[in-house]
Image (spheres, helix red, strand yellow):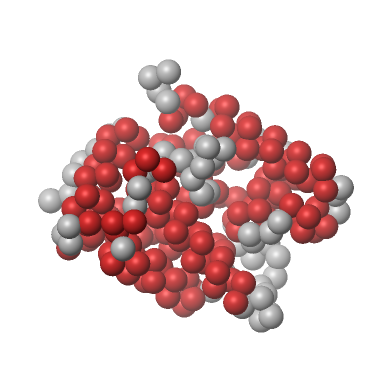
Length: 202
């Protein structure tokens, strides 16, 4: 039976237990983790790759790797959710780079900004490090809507396209330093405004 959790902290504890069971070859733990996060992982794959079939293939590869190499997870480096999102993003971007010479879909064909939280990697500068609940995701969606368009677009290009700061500056027709500032400022705003979500006891 799946665990019922009500807070981000409880969710992380439940996920950590699932990862421990996964490392021991527990198929039921794998089923629960897949049920909990396959949708958000697929959403990330689809938003990066913009092709359903390829996104499904990458999703299958990610969870296969998670099942076979679950012992690689290090809880000191982030939550299980963060680990999964970083792994998913990495595999999706690897696939995207292999397809760089193929025609790309028209700009704006996907609503990328709506689920940026679901896509952000972990890290000390990442406001999504501990997020795995609907409440937190909704909060980020609301905060993203308050960012200036250029800051939000710069974040999307950095994350979904995997572009360097220089490429982002070129695409947005901005000086390199300005592009870097937009990304840094956007991340700082999200971090500051999300402290109440991720550190409710502080």
